[in-house]
Image 1 (cartoon, helix red, strand yellow):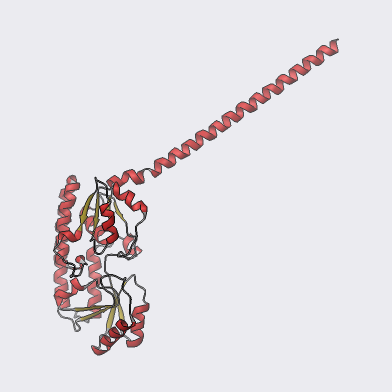
Image 2: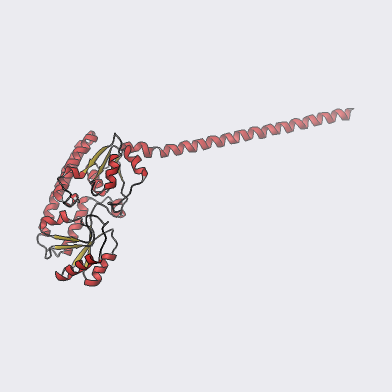
Length: 324
């Protein structure tokens, strides 16, 4: 009988230990999965917190199509307002296709600045879909121009001064607290361009040659025409036209007829076409900078309009053999 009671007690004690162990495991698992759930919620909330500003902070951003409006806005505003450029560095702007994310950024931006409907049809489409709070500025609308003229308005130094002046007033309406700084930078930029005009006039009116053979698109007519320099380009106002054999033969013939010492190309273009002219004529290749798109290196260093135009002046001086 004593043995029976002992066995009953032992079995009960053992069952209680097993029960307690099961409870410990049960609650341990509950606590474990609870902590896992809290951790996952924290990760998701943290991820949301870091993703969300890309849309909310866009309200503080000024969106631009490419490097020309980027230069103007940046040199007027300085670093006080974040600028988002839609066109990636080194990308040809005429046929660029923006991502759907560009429209999201644009709808929440303070403003959208682009060059023109003609040069950037994709930007014109985006402008139509901009949010009601987004102010839109088309630079070409600020200067007198017609479809028959060269649409590369920033290559006209006088028009570039107007673009700085008018864009400054546009920005003053959006950022009134920064208006004094904006107008100061406007005056500084206009003065720098005025000096640049004198440098181009002094240099390009004394060159030995007056023909620029450009293995690129028709981007420099506004710059060269005032100084009596003829521009002959392989393409039209964009790179979309086909480079025909007939056109290449004509260019090679002009180089040989006028004994032209150099041909011009663009920094981001393939050297293949220019090299084919060199192979036939032995001329030198000189780079020009259209500014509407720049290399990633120049973009990262935020090279200014004045710096890029000085590069163009030095290239023209070299290729046209202008006196130092």
